[in-house]
Length: 445
Image 1 (cartoon, helix red, strand yellow):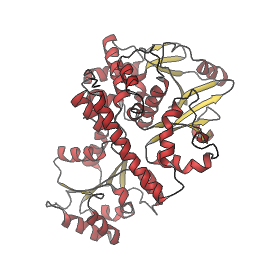
Image 2 (cartoon, helix red, strand yellow; image 1 turned 180 degrees about the vertical axis):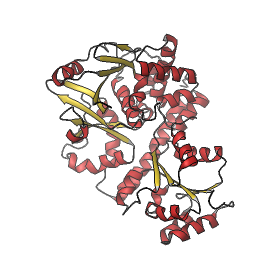
Image 3 (cartoon, rainbow, N blue to C red; image 1 turned 30 degrees about the vertical axis):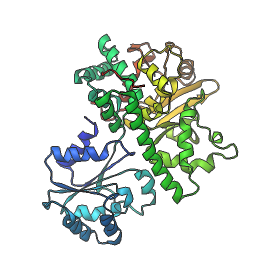
């Protein structure tokens, strides 16, 4: 399955003299992608999974000399390594984050090249004393984006190229292509971007099998949550995570902590919320008090909406009947698509490198998202129904704050007015993509 991160890893293989650090949430495909890229380039490597190789982990925890570390890792390898060429791949380095303080010496030694990978690194690195600057290329892996899913599911590259060209020119897509991509979008809402789930979809097209794989991933995530809660009794990670679907299903999607416990407020749960954010399991969109660049300067840290890192995991919390209705692609059905559509957009914008904000004011209303653009903030509204041209908050924002352009994402093909661009919602990733130059069967795309 094609991943955009392949380009970054290939650049590291071809040109970089640094170590490579790949991080991201669990089950987003980090280990598989690293192995495939090393194999594709016919690079000899040895791999140590520090969750499984406790003997190697015990040694690393005892050894302080970085030079000795490279010797031992080469000696422990079950295949011969070539100095100056072979790669040592340390996976699950959250078990030994201190390796990052020693990476300078390992890189300077030039005996081997190093690839490091781990989950929950945003959590673990907070306790690291110092990380040498300039000695590692760092890249975060996200769940598969819509275009990655579409390609993996049988959508042709020509259709994806057509979508990208129409986005660039702000012109409507061919009708048949738009219909095909809209169907793929609805399927993506169900399947999401976790590679293991996408594989199950491609192999079975079975809704129940997809649901079982998604729940397996959620159980793995919660096993992590429990470990950290046991270390820190203040953490309430599972409680915060479990309430996200219900919070998003409210008309006002602002995360309300007293829904968890009426007696407790944000400061009691702040550490748990930050843990989910740092572990890349949840995505926050902060409100801003002033919709001007830089948006970060006016964000309110305790007022935010909280989305799941993968929309498929959100959909897995819904009844099977809702998923079957999503497959019918009928926007007039009586189901609340708003939370799914917004979560999808948040996921795509975040994977493209954008920090997420939103704006709410009594005289304006609520604008779903704002991101930084090249010339200033871009206000974005997400519409899941037929009334996509009714967007009072955007109209009020443009009138009150002088915005010249806004974006509406909906199920409809591209349209333009003087100040509003209407885009198909499946184009969301292109708005922020920094790399852009019973048994129910799901019909294949």
